Image (cartoon, rainbow, N blue to C red; front, side):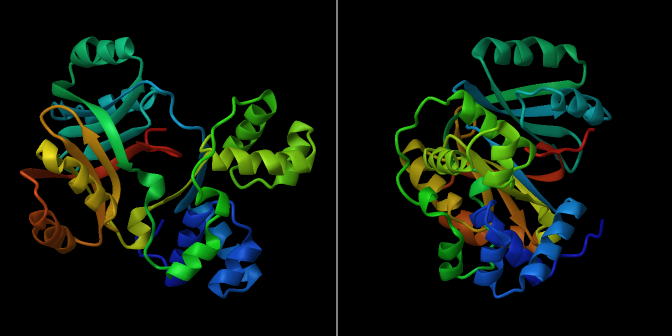
Length: 318
């Protein structure tokens, strides 16, 4: 796969699909001023290359969510990375560029999390220390991030109206809802007609339930991209200390920044974990002195990511 950045046309197609991963190719082409066939051809090429992936999922269960910072012995990164990637309760794993640190998100019951941190990780013989930071609040996550290549009008035209309104009260999921979600897990852009045929249900019912599930946030879609191919090869996790009086304001400000693809309030020695993508190390420097320096942040420790070992829809260990 080439490391060259994708064309502006490809990046605009990706940005359109970030607004709505299920947008029809006809509507996408109309809003972007493209031909339907060329747009469809470009989309298929992006999918075939792995530069673009679609994910359909339900919200994570209400369990303890921890941000783990794991310091690793020299030469043990691959071994530990593979072991953690096999766990279904760990959806995110990043390895530092120096190979001496992993950052991971663990979503598990408290006793399971405690056993991993207190017993299993130390017993692996691969780590020097592990920090576990409970996630207190999510200001932004990967599915909220947008490529900044569309106009406000284009973004509005591409965003489904049901995702803009205040989420209605969620109803308990029915057996049919579960079947719809399972079908989308296998094929996130499957049409209502395709899902209806697969689960033997009326197309009108499937269409109605899809709208309701999205509106109530019981069904979440994400358009995942290869950041290097959209011109953002530098991935950085920042571990920040912010006083409690400024935490919410700083978290909200950073979540709005176009470089940031994740902002979490955490407990422990650090109070914020912020993930951001940059076009170059010079951009990282500018972000540090022009954005972070202007906010009431007590300290910010950047860790450059060498590889994203596991993220939803991506597992580099298999």
